[in-house]
Length: 495
Figure (tube, helix red, strand yellow):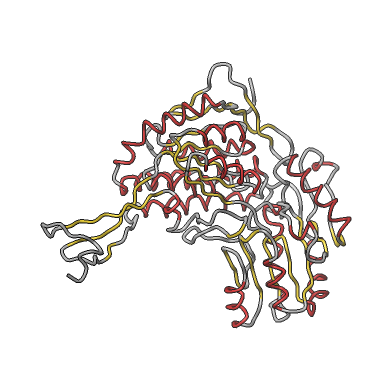
């Protein structure tokens, strides 16, 4: 008997393991042990999941939104009850330290609670008509079957961002998670199951992203696709979805700058930088991957940074004393080390840069927090690395800091540390991105506010906040004429 769980697909309200199905396992990035075994789904399984969602859609659409909200509130309560259990799964399967694992689950709880309240809002508009005895309004309606394709770095928070928003709007969902966090996805789905979600409203398929993702996008019954992941895959999803004129929402990469001006509170900026750059081992789309540092405080601040980076504790992420855990997988480790090798050739390595080996590190995927000093324009200063690698760029002025910050293909998050309120508000206007923090790092989004970015970070929509429902609803405009005779808009005006 296997010493780890063997999990099936969740289709039509049942956990199923198709006869003869291939399986894959997920690995703990700390020690290489197996976390769980999962069905490697096929296009046939996708068809079954979409069929279940399509069949369940009419009844779910007809369910009053406040009733949908009551179910979501129960989901949040289940997640609260299981928070510590799920947080440990997040840490064991993805590798983020346990405090961040708890934060991942708390973000899921917060957002599901927030979306439960949308069941009594889902606002439309009422506006005056240009004609007499005519009432004009808009209402929101669901899109239909939605595919939610999610990454591994926030394996409970991001799925719930998508699933809860889609469900409160009356859509049904087929959920395809990143393969290496399939146990986390299972924990998400079982919370909805425990809350009494009707069969077929939420379905889970696990397995290879290309095969299952393409099958989902190509199915004409799927009317919207919500994808979070890399830019290259996002382009493929967007183009493929366009073939059938599907609504496609993309949340992609970032190369997020933190500007530290010469009048900044340097100790505060240092605390923010350490959390932004090396929290989650740098594996956040909002991670602080560029430090744009004013020349007047450059040497002083880097000296402070050196001392703190040297004191960061790497190790078992379940140990509350650990500051930085492993990166999520062997593939992730390989990619990051390749970028570090590039950085060694084009920039000055200040600290770190090595894979950790020996003892407990041998079975895991540990990389030292790494700091490069680099001119703007190198690959490591412009391309997303998605690991514990920070590029430090010296600038002589605020204007140059903003130019450097904006001169990348991404526009997700940004940060400025300054004591000048005028400069802070200028930065809010000048930085080309979806999120700006003042005197805080580039990470720390809250669920009641929109999340997303500009340029190659995504397709312009926003997740989280009240704007989340826009991704999953269609606007219907309604005209009610109670004049009892034919009125002709534009033609009858003024008569």
